[in-house]
Length: 78
Image (tube, rainbow, N blue to C red; front, side, top):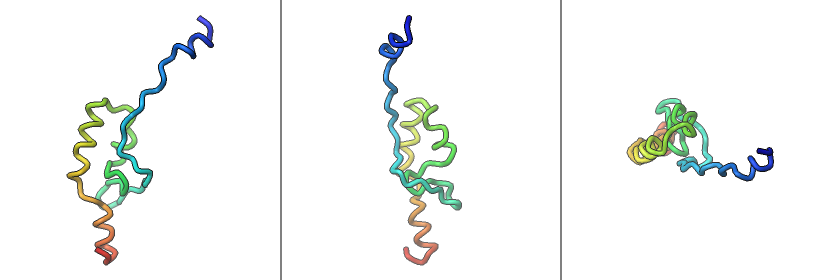
């Protein structure tokens, strides 16, 4: 099989659902990303997680404390 044939038969990469909002900064106190509320291990391993594992993390995100609220309170703005 030629390289061209292999390229044309290759499946396109599967889109991976992600809660990323392109605000990537991790709060040192909580360990959560300020944008998506994931932890560094969750962010780093996201592409290797199964669909079910990603869904479980995404389902847990709304229940996690918002690190921005804590930062604003610490800065006297909340």
